Image 1 (spheres, rainbow over the protein chains, first blue to last red):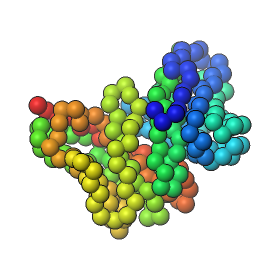
Image 2: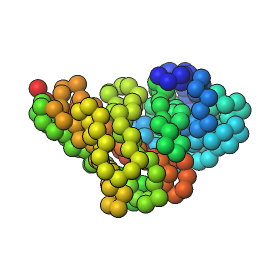
Image 3: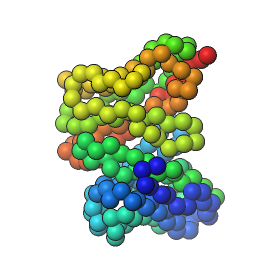
Image 4: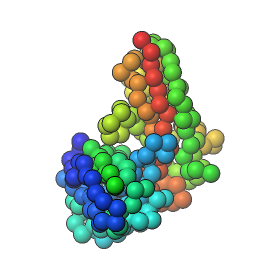
Length: 112
Length: 112
């Protein structure tokens, strides 16, 4: 999987609790992305990063924050989880310019 | 208008036929175009990339790009049941950004 590891792979959490998902890469890619995938919506971009401490919003960023303190790690935080954030979350690396993007294995998050 | 549009399908073809998948995008400044295949419960995997007008062939797959019409397509020749999956179109460079934006995907079923 192109040196991308997402953790955890599965998580069940309660409404209102904070949740952090981690994406770790060993490929030294500058660009990293967080997407969520829901039936009928495809892959929607949450946030992306173009370098350490450099991040920008995607189309569905409300309720999410990100941090990138090291090239290899990109963290996605749900400050106060809601049931609408139940989804499968994918991290991707690469994807800038002509670079191809590669995906992690995904994290299935359920908010109850 | 969504940035990247695909026919949601589902698309059903008999084994051995040609499957044609289509994608349109909104920004003429888009630079790079990708097709991903996603099996149920798995992460997307890259199958084709195309950057200039015309056709690009790789085995049974042909990607076609027409920037004037803002249209990109994927042809799968001699379709096999193992090609049954959801196919995602992705575009980079819209709005001058490095966001990698996906369409909702087209579900393809190849019937034996």
